[in-house]
Every structure is written in C-alpha cells, then in structure tokens.
Image (cartoon, rainbow, N blue to C red; front, side):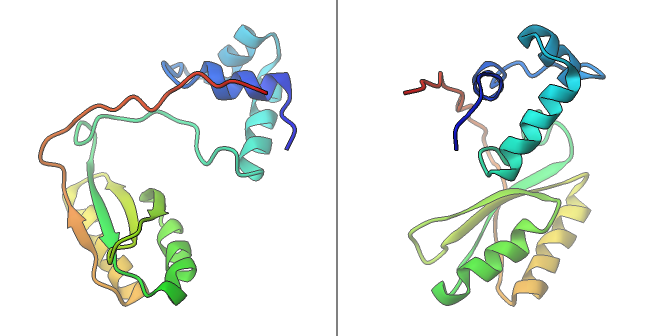
Length: 151
C-alpha cells in the first residue's frame, strides 16, 4: 500500500498527545493543512487497509472502568475462528497469537468488574474454552510510540 503524505503524518505525528477536544480530527487537519473530512477519510482508508485498527485514547488501567489481560488455549485448527469470535466483542481492543499452550491473548475492558466478568464468561460460552484472566496487580508504563521512517 502506498501511503500519502497525509497518511504518513497521521500515523507519525499523533502517536502521543491525541487531542482531547470535541473535534480532534478538525484540529489534526488544521495542523496538517487539510480539513476535518480529509483526516476522517484518510483514517478510514488506513483502517480499511489494516494499517491501523483503532484511533483513540489509552487510559491508565483501572482509572476508568475495569480491564484484564486474558488468554485462551486454543486448538491450532480453531485459532482463526476463535480469534474472530473474541475480536467481535466491543470489550476486546485487540488480540494476538503467542507461542504457548495459551496461544491467544487479549485485553478485555468494561465499565465495571461485573460486566467484565460477564464478558469473559460469555467468551467462554461462545468459544467453549476456559478464559485465563490475569488482572493487573502492578502497572508499568511502556511507551509504544516511535518515530516512523519512510523508505
């Protein structure tokens, strides 16, 4: 996929300090010299092409709602299907495969502990697999932002 200059700036320039305003895309566009709709269109194209999965704020765990890291031990032949089931929950912001008996990991969030437990139980019912929930005991901040270089 060939990225436009706008798309490259959107990917690189807003990894930190996402604007907390009623119209963040309008302000992003103002900074980049385009209008709000151009930003929205570019982000939608990046999402459709699989370059980004989500644009939004990341809150410190347990500062808003409840969350947990969770894992499933999925038979390899079911991995893609189960990953699709897990990804369909709006409470799951991503999942990924790991080389381990517990080979599908994800983070689940909810407005409160009760709903979080309900979601994990529902995932167990939907997949037929027990969920290993690993709630946060101590938080560490890892900055995943990095300067992108284009070749």
